[in-house]
Image 1 (cartoon, rainbow, N blue to C red):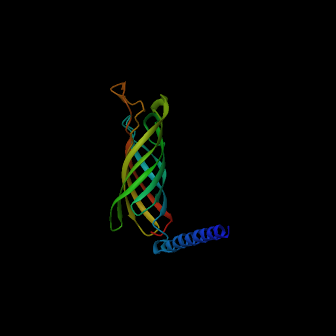
Image 2: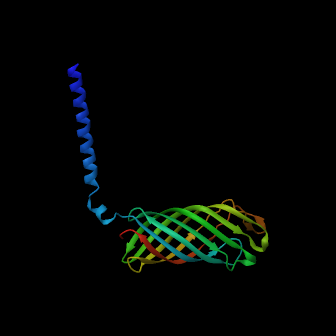
Image 3: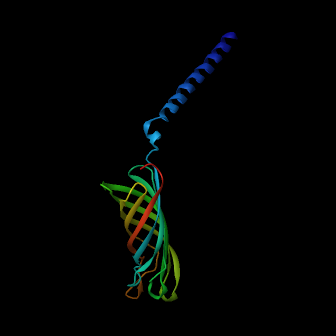
Length: 196
């Protein structure tokens, strides 16, 4: 019986020693240089002004928007945006969209950063002359260029091409299958969090 008690004490001590080694290694890993600098994550927030062709008539719709970029690494990040294009639409047409997705920095040169993105979300459309409205699922490839003014501020030029597969577009007076609004945005961003 004494032998079994000594064996169980030995097992407990072995587990405590192993746990101590693993926890010590984890604590040592937490002290590497990148963590002392704050890591690679940054959070940028900004505002923009957009001009989009609604793919329903000839007039462009205009309006403000807001966005955020959360960079997980130096190249890969998450982006979200909301646009409220209520101005200049023919016959009172408006478009709003709320989108989120991934972004990837393709290339950086001096203060310029060239990025690609793919977003998912919804577009809300009020059609011209009060003929109807609707909300539609959207998938949106796009790209943008950031120019870093300084460590905290950047200026952005953006292009997006929205695919709305379930929106009832018109072609030669007959319903078509989907709308493809697209357009440009210009904006500024401010870095809230992060060291870069």
